[in-house]
Length: 216
Image (cartoon, rainbow, N blue to C red):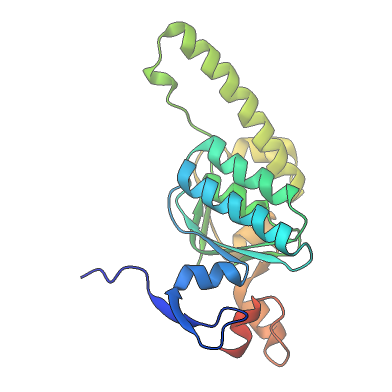
C-alpha cells in the first residue's frame, strides 16, 4: 500500500522544537533537488523555480541535483539546462538509476568536475524526437527544419562539454547509446564515478555531499 511522501522531523531555524515535514521539503532546504520522473512542464517549473530561489537565498553554496529519469520533453529539458548555466551557485549533477535522453543532457549540464554517476547507473543519449508525424505536410516541413536546428544545437553542447568531436557525437546520436558509469566517464558525460568519491573521501569530510548528509 502506498505510504505517500515520508515525513521526517526538522527544526526550522528560530523554532525551539522540530516539526514533522515532508522529506523533500527538508531536502530542498538543504539545497538538494530531485529529478525522478519524466521531464514535463510541471517538474521543470518546480526545479527551475527552486534553483532560482536557492540562488537568491545563497549565491555561494552548491546545489545538488539527483537524476533518475527516462528523459522527456525537449524544450523542458533545455529550460532546466539553461537555468543551471544561469544561476550563480555550482550545480552538482548526480545520476542514480538512469539518465536517458534529455536527462543525460541535464546530467551533462552540471558544473565541470562536479558531474557524478553512481557505480550502477546507466546513461543513454540519442537524437531528439518530435511528433511531426501527426502534422499536415506544411507543418511537417517546418517542424523537421526546426528539429534539425535543435539537434545541431544539442550536438554542439554535447561536443563542447564532453570534448568529443562534433561528428563523433552526431554519429553516436543516430541511435540509442547506453553507457555504464565508467563508460560515461570515459565519454566525458560525467567526471566521477560515485565509488571513486567514496574512496577519495573515506578518511576525510565528505564535502561533495550536501551538508545534511555529513552526520548520517
